[in-house]
Amino acid sequence: MNSFKIKLDIKNFTYGWFIFSILSIILLASLQAYFDYKRAIQDTKISTSNITMLLTKKFENDFEQAENILKLAEYFVVNLPKDNINFYS
Image (cartoon, rainbow, N blue to C red; front, side, top):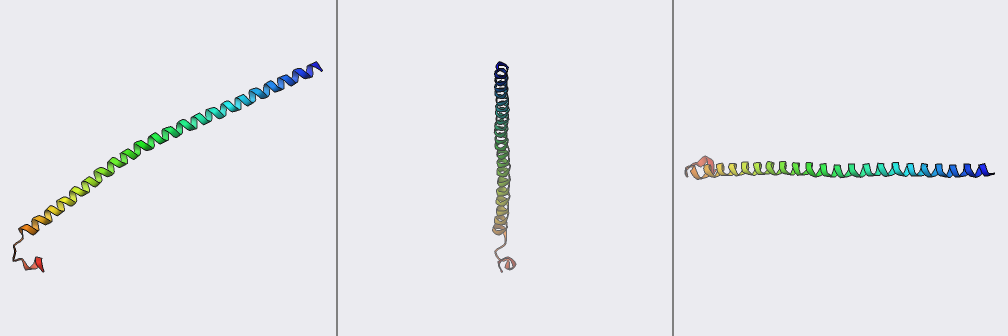
């Protein structure tokens, strides 16, 4: 009877370590997922910032080109002879 009690205590001790091991593994996996999530958010912030800068430069270039086209059109309108019938018709 006494040996049965010792086996029961060893069994409970083994279950305790098993549960502790499982909880430790779950904790490590959760921490790894959390740090991966934080790194992914940081990478997304960096790539979003880069894309925003590229789009800003692209729009700035487009507006400069549009301004140049308007200046060219203004130059033609101002410098055309007033009696140019083909242009005014």
